[in-house]
Length: 201
Image 1 (cartoon, one colour):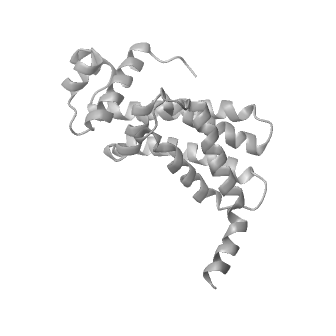
Image 2 (cartoon, rainbow, N blue to C red):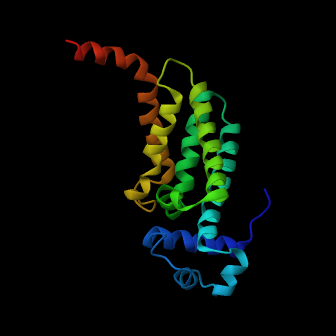
């Protein structure tokens, strides 16, 4: 991947933080200029509109997290290790991109047309990678598509309660989430009949 423009990186980081704090609709281009230290003309050198800025934040984030996830799983020796590597990378990446995580969670529907379609393709590719990893884990377990979205649900809301500077570092949090998820994921197929039998009296 080609190196990104550092000034654009700075603009996107400041814009993500501002969107996360204020919300997309409540943020103006002047707000973004003040937050980023760019002039309006300087911002328009990189983007034509506020929506394009939101698009670049989301697209850049998916590019980085997908590339990093592929690199992380490529060196893992077995399916369960690859899944754990994916979880660790996702959590540690977004622990340092909490504003972007919130923007991805809340502002996707603000994109329209080709920008929205492009980001959705990126997202589908990332979900597809996780689904493949789940499918490869040996044993009888839950539907991998359902499991993928359940796992993302577990990981993607950490911005509401997790503090990276707190007592649990990001890598340790990732390992905890991986263990919680994998124990339930692998046991789900076996637990369901017992639960049904119990409920059936």
